[in-house]
Amino acid sequence: MKPLIIGIAGGTGSGKSTVARSIADSLVDAQVAFLDMDAYYRDHRHLSMEERRRVNWDHPDAFDLALLASHLEALARGEAVDKPVYDFVSHLRAPETVRVEPADVIVLDGILLLVDARVRLACDVKVFVDTDADIRLIRRIRRDMMVRGRPLEEILDQYLHTVQPMHLQFVEPSKRYADLVIPRGERTRSRSTSSWRRSRGGCTSARHEGPAMSAAEGARILVVDDEPDIVALVVYHLAKAGYRVATATSGPDAIQLARRDRPALIVLDLMLPGLSGFDVLAQLREDARTAHVAVLMLTARKDEPDRIKGLQLGADDYLTKPFSPQELVLRVGAILRRVASADQTSDVLRVGPLAIDRTAHQVTVNDHEVELTPTEFKLLLILAERRGRVQARAHLLETVWEAAPDIQTRTVDMHIQRLRTKLHPAGDLIETVRGFGYRLKAADAGAA
Image 1 (cartoon, rainbow, N blue to C red):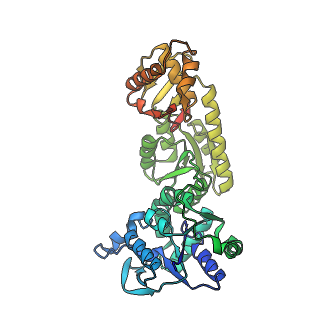
Image 2 (cartoon, rainbow, N blue to C red):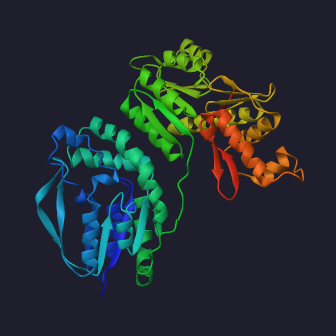
């Protein structure tokens, strides 16, 4: 009889192992075997110790997924496998292996379990343990310091530069493949095990690839601070609130990232290496590419002259340390709502390098004027005011051309094509949605 294979995924420190043990404990009449995805890290003995420390262990390429999939297939056929043993201190595979015998139930856990299609398809039941980011971080710090002997600074640096970005890029989106999502991890284990007892007989056929849910995509936020613990705290809470977060630890890096990525908002410290926060803010406001990016100052400098200087230089808000993470998230949301509201009433509408002056009927790209016909201007303005939303050809015909009877759909396409040519390089902002119409990308929008 083919074994039941249960795959348990979730972010680092989410409580996957606890859920796995709870499930096994609930299956009192079955033989249970365990596989942990961490055992299948690739061997890096060809690298130096320093090079091994820099490996991105949270990327799917860090795992020998082909070996894991083959082991699952062998267990499904009733064959024993030799599971690798991984040493997390030396970052090497140990010479010995662990024999895993066939069983009635195979329980497999790992952060990227649902990312690989081969591993997903081998699982009869797919579970995602969904736990708050701050709880997961605390558990990871405890584990890495106490079990793996790693220093706190190294743990936080890895979390900021690989763990958290990879979670947002790979782990969180893979939740849509889960048959069952367990919220808050360990705290629901008693409820989850009772569910397994009730559903044990009927869950072997759950093998679908359809989405269960999608991750929210928020505005892009740049956090600039040289204190790792502060950066970690801010990043976790903003990411938990649904924002996409990038980080910089110096003034020059902040300016470079702001010019390149044009975030919706920057959380900016004052005391930074390279350039002070005041200098960064001044340069941002002097550059047309970043002049309209919202800025929230977050600093330990509480004196009134500092607050006044920051606001005079163009900061949208000023919050002092120590601070409440919840208040920070609320202030960020309030600033972004004000920007969005101003966007609807301002004479100048900005979308990335594109600026549309409603009053003067003037369009510029990177501060260079673009000559448009009245119809082209009206078409572009409608797309910009409704950016991020698909505008059907029929709707554009009705609003731009007032649905004149002699106008054909091809006319809209021809005007879009001319707009893209004239707006180059901003013409790439106009996207074709096949079968529906057109949409102006919502990214990097702002108002003056």
